[in-house]
Every structure is written in structure tokens, then in C-alpha cells.
Image (cartoon, rainbow, N blue to C red):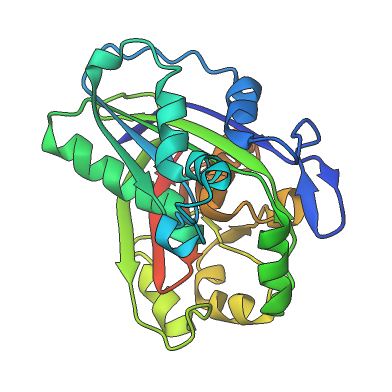
Amino acid sequence: MHIVDHKYIHGTEDRGNYIAIPELNRNKHSAQQFINLADLDITLDKPTAFLYVDGVSLSPSESGLNPVDIKNYIPKIKATAAYIAHEWVSTFDGKEHLHKVDVMSGTCAAGIQAMYEAQRLLNDGVIKEVIIIGAERITEDTLNLFKELQIPIVCGDGFVYMKMAMHKPGHPLVFDTQWKYTYQRNPFMFPREVLDTLIPDYPVDFVKLHGTGTASNTAAEQGLAQIADVRIYKPTIGHTQGISSLLETCILLDDCTVSGKVLVTANGLGGNYGAFTLIK
């Protein structure tokens, strides 16, 4: 599977506990803002799947929706991942070629979940291209969650777009995509013995760690950190939640200090984690 196109935006304005995209209005619906910022011209001309990456896809039954209060109901529905995915589809030309739309919500590992699904769809042979889009605008709820859990990470706004296809020589290659689950009593913890299962049986030149900077995550990633030169981008762009692994992959693609075979990893809330190998 090859990455035939990519685009991304990350925060540039440090606001202390998060790194912001300064053009984003915090008081307005974010999807249309990202649509405008991304300025994508997507025309479909072959059987295509669209995967929208949303770190946490909150069920309406869990979001406090009250059918009696109509004034609050519609705005909350517009904030759901399915609705936002539909907004992106409305910007595509050639919609008759769109065979599938799905939402990836594997929290911080959702980007690798999307890669795993893209590989499966392309291997089946019916789908010829996969479009992946994801966006993250940091909210007070996000910041309060990490504060309450005493997880000292810097968050970040971000946007990512990728187009994937098979048999595109000359483009970056993605292979050996892994998407795994392991039960842990604490859904925020990832033991080293679990992450060590992501270490491939072939040498790599670089490894892109999840790299939150927390003591527990750093300790868990020790095995991965020892297999090759390490890249961690969160200190610069913040933790962009569900899109982090894909946005950081885009940065890898544009990083002139990185070449050869790169292992990309991510850990997700609730026992989800994954990896893939990139050749650029």
C-alpha cells in the first residue's frame, strides 16, 4: 500500500497546556473551519473508501442528549463523527465512486486503525483508493480530562489528509500494518511487554514512538526506543489525539533527516495499539 498524497496542519501557537492552530475559532463549529483551512480539492474517479479519523466517537446516549430540549439536540448531533464525515463528503466531486464511509475511533491509535482498515479494503480488490481525513481541535473537556487523570501532556490542534492506493511505485510504501488489543485493568497504561510485541523481526532505520513524554509511557517504550534512531514530534506540535500517528507520519515524510525504513507506533485508550512500517 502506497501513500500517493498527503497534507497536514499542526498548531504553531503555544498556549501553555496546548499548541493551537491560531486560525481556529474556539466558539464556532470546527468542521467547516477545517474544511476551509485544508483547502482540499478531492475528485473521485475510481472505487473509493473514505475513512474519517475521530479519536473519541461519543455515543449520543452518553453525551447527555435530551430529546425534549430540541435547541441543544441538533448542535450536539452536528458534533458527532458521522455528521462531520458527511460534511467532508459533501466537498468531494465524483461522489458516485464512493463505495464506503466509516469512522475510526480508536482514540490515540485511530490513525493506525485507519491504515489497517485501508490495507484490508485495498487488498480485497474492489476499492482502488482510500481517502483518510482527520482533525482535532483541543477543547476544555480534553484539557480537563488529562488534568483530572494527572497525565501531564501538552495537547495540540491538528489536521491530516492522506490518499492510499496499491501498486504506486515511487511513492512511500506502508506495510506490515498491525492493529492489536490487549486488556489492561487500567485503560491508560501500556506495559512494556505489550509494546515489545510491536518490534518487527526485521531491522529498521528509525522508530516513531507514541512519545507522550509521561514517565509510564517512556518506560513502556524503552524496548522500541532501543531498536533504531528515535523520532518524537509531540514536544513541537503537541498530542493531537486520534490523528497523531498519521499527522506525525506526514511530518516524517517531509523530514529530510529521516530516510529508509521507519516503524510508526501508537497507543490508544482502552487497550488499542498498533504499528506499521513506512519506507520513504
